[in-house]
Length: 567
Ligand SMILES: Cc1ncc(C[n+]2csc(CCOP(=O)(O)OP(=O)(O)O)c2C)c(N)n1
Image (cartoon, rainbow, N blue to C red; front, side, top):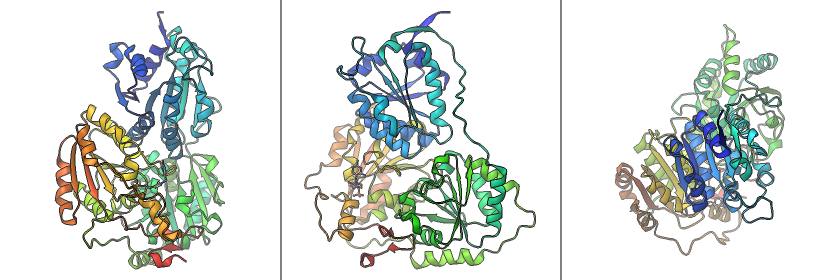
């Protein structure tokens, strides 16, 4: 059998794994490496060259989140690879499957004190699901297959494969290897005894509540969740990462919970007697962080594929280790034929809380409110777009006022909160879902962290819309300074900002500027219906604040709904 070199082995495996897009950077050395790729691969795989390696990592992440397929990222070692670490950590926190390949193309040096060399395995140990250093060309095919398998199965996450030059240059006969990782078994179904126990707890509960996380989306459990909620008559909340897991217009849908979640949803958690958490990890942003006072009246069922999340933050009464979709099916299978429950009182109580403090805004005065923009965006796009958000107030308002109708449509750096995620994630998402309208919603602060990727979007002739909500501040920081630091606005205002429309135009994109409330609707419609890469800069009121907000250190019933609530 003919031998091929390590680089070709890598691409042969990627092709057979149905990889159609690879994200990398446009540096000359990487291009050299890619330039070596025979035409046969160039025709079959799209190489997207980002301007910054961090952005390339977020692109791979956005691709994975929107499409459900693993995102592939190639970088060189040293500064190239290190720049991807923020992207890996972002993907790790949000369980997004990326395979980061570090390809060393320097034939002359490969020890750690050489130019451009870094210990990538060491550096990424704590922000990847797993990582590999490939030592022999014979191991390469199997390692790449394993990396893809580990990244996309169980609780997904980023996996790094560091390939030294001799491994890429070495030659071996190519075989597509079988893989079996003995120590890596992923549970599918839950233990029947635990399923039975959970169902008994649900049957005797008066105020049960589904606390759904991103795991529901990853497992594709929407239909099962609807049937489960309706069959057992349980209202449904979700975390920020779970947005889109349940249809927002379904009568059982309450809203999302957490730091800036809806009042009724947070109150429901506090008053519930049974929390059924599915694919959520009880992090501090979802629970407020006061774990001792979390849901004080409730027993907890926790369904998760990752056993390490059980009892981590919250003590659980009934753990079920398994895939969300499978576990929901199992619980549906044993619903008693004569099951009846009157939970009208519980549902009406939740409605009452919603009436007391609904998610609302009022567009008054000369300045545009970000809430108004998001509400209009939701209306114009009918909640059908994929939206990649950045981090800050605009991120929270997007989650509150954009009515996401579909799963894999709300792309947000929930776990790490990485400013600069939005634009590259949107670019990656458009490659993953070219059939959908993809929009980046960003703040002036976040956008400046990766705005060079406008070049990548234009170069690829994408159809991508970007909304920059310009409040001339790090708005979320300003909000905390207003509420908790006596208005000490240190470092949160930008004295100098670029003209974002000119920035867009200088990259060859189209740009619009909206500054008055009565221009908003028409302006947005025009921008969204203009072909190509279009940036719309909207001047927004920097004094608007995101409510409700969980009181730092408080429980989930202690919400700030206006500034005077801060004591
Ligand atoms: C990389 C990074 N640096 C700093 C922060 C802390 N931080 C969180 S939100 C925020 C302000 C974001 O400002 P902007 O993007 O303008 O959004 P706004 O809050 O104004 O809507 C900052 C600085 C972060 N989350 N990520």
